[in-house]
Length: 179
Image (cartoon, rainbow, N blue to C red):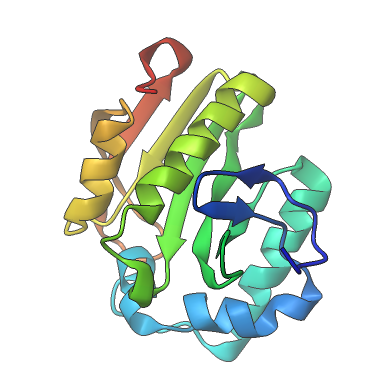
């Protein structure tokens, strides 16, 4: 791995690192692609300023909270493929939100499942998180399948503040994980 950022996790095919200011091109490749962000933001395209703000938010979250949606790279090629990680959801209750987003070229190859499974293990085993939550766009069948395979159970739907779309909301407790 040629990246200077801190390595957080590693799987059979992936390396998770941390975002830094030098990752603007990677951030735009992910959050600047409407086909990718439609699963998060609906039909709203992220502006250049919004992508910059997202990158800054991830860097600050790592500094403040010790977690972020970490950038993912193929282990054998160092090619950027997306991000997967955690965001505090209810820190007082030790609940974190799992999230994953891949660039288009890497959809349907099992990377999201592999990355999410590693983050679930990391959250429960290393961070000793009590509960994980997650949600996804209602039309994103792949995300629904991944969360189901990981043992998440759907709790209810909630309105996404950014898009106004009702999204399924899931929960996973440590004793329910599929490993």
